[in-house]
Length: 324
Image (cartoon, rainbow, N blue to C red):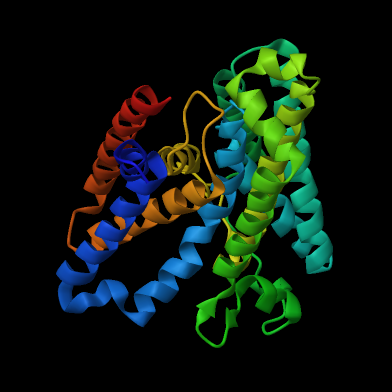
């Protein structure tokens, strides 16, 4: 490896993200009181909590590589969660209730994708509008009343264990679901021709069309994937909490995009890896958790995450100019 290749590797965005991730783990491991950050209870808690946002971020990252954004995830998640809860309370078997919630999420994603490709409006604006619309519909429909669903899912049933159990008595099953989705989407993105279409669509849409790629279909499918993951994450979160709340998912839209930026995805599309998305997805909750354990006021943590995102955007811009 010559010096130029070595510099490119060391200063490349995925490598920088990995270095920052390792540094954060080391800092929080060493400087939290009694090294509680690497304690079994804290790791188990992280493993249960981060997949709620992490599963959605995987889809949001795929969509960003295709050159689009989806801000409506913060409304689709609680909307599908509400449908899941209502179906359970109506006596529906949990599996079918979850399946309908996931399909509903996919349908809302399809609607987002259809509006974006047909109107040619920026996805940022379209999904901001659908975020506000579906959140408003949910607030009116649910009357902002929380629903308890714990009594409608048999404790210790296969369904409950599949969404809220542990592997080996310790490892949270939620993390296993995150890994499964990351592997599936990673294989699709890096080893299937659809992944090539996603990169081509995000990098240069006109050139992709000239090569015969149906870019509108690619984008709509990516929006559908985001919606499906929102539906699943909504069910995952509802089972873990044992209840529905209309405020679920608030702030997820910006945190998902921040995680993708930290994970070395380009805001212009066409650049990014599933490994980078996973690293970014892990970095944000670790930063969140570590700062809390170090005694940083909870209202100040958002400022740190915002600062980290700005630094990664600057790093992204620099490396893009330097090596592209």
